[in-house]
Amino acid sequence: MPCSRGLAQYGKPGTGTQIITPRHWYQRTIASRVLLPIAFLFGLVVRARRLAYRMGLLPSASAGIPVVIIGNLVVGGSGKTPLALHVSECLRSAGWSPAILLRGYGGSASRPLAVTHASDPAVAGDEAVLLAGRSRSPVWVGADRVQAVRALRAAHPDVDVLVMDDGLQHYRLRRDLEIVVVDGREFGNGWMFPAGPLREPVSRLNSVDAVVSHGSRMDGYAMRLDCHEAVRLGNALERRSLAGFSGHPVHAVAGIGDPERFFGQLRAGGMLVKPHPFPDHHPFSQQDIDFGDGVPLLMTEKDAVKLRAYASPERDWWVVPVTADVDPAFDAWLLATLRDMRDRLPLGALTGSDVTSIGRAASEPEQEHGRKR
Image (tube, rainbow, N blue to C red; front, side, top):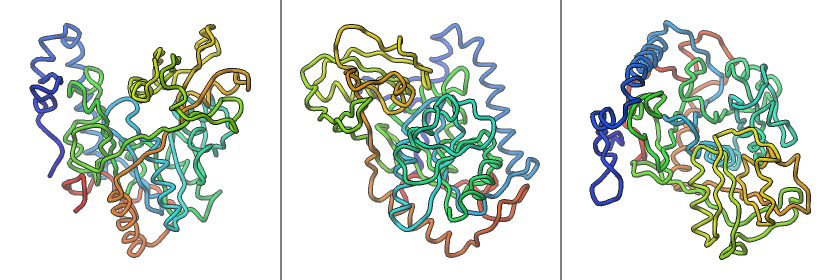
């Protein structure tokens, strides 16, 4: 069944979640009287831009290999990066040669760049460095995804599938599969940016290939983020079970899209959490986490790549790696779909302004999405 709902159904009486409608939101906030007209105009621009790609008025390019988009509809993180890592490792285990491509948000790189675990996150972006440290696949960044794919394929001619962490709204590069992650925050107040968190309207879900539900009530393949141990920042050989922190106070630092998700995971493990939320992609300094009380500090992997320059084996700083645990039916669907593509589509070179080769732009008919049966 389609997983888009009427806005008034996002909250249910008796669940502790408030029902929010556009009218309620408009009446409750003075700021919305300014932001809603801007959001309306933003929504018009978003729809017009997508329509222009569907009609071929704006050119799109094919990567020459299958492209799998891992995206979301809202501003901020929703678990895309762990899922991108899971997808790339799943494909590699099945005999594919994947590469991962990101915009490199938060980094200063102006040209396509190959990323390693030792790359500077200020240049490549924190998520790219995180992925390069954990993935066995090539990781590249580039604000111009078309140019980045050209450089990536020239450097790695064996790559036969591309996994894009984010990029759902980057229509210049054509795509074969669109996978949207929806987390527990779902769609907030249901409004377009800046009055709400939406990059595209909720109806966009009707045209994607699959929805991965990460703690949300949306129909789709279920995913959860598992964490069982902590690694000392400054000495990766020293590991400690998270259960060892249970019952003790800890500082928890998170500069991710939903810091409370990380804090909640630690509280569920019995820790007495002192939370320190920061904006997503926050450029950390040592002073940000110098609390001076000797209490252990736990952080996300994404934040750790920016704080490792200040780490030492003596500091009681710990990184908590997470792994995406995804419904096995998702992996089966993904591999079967890509096998079918490989059988019927030839591999080719990257082409500009190509509207007939591998990959679809925004011109495909809308289809029901979510769990494939």
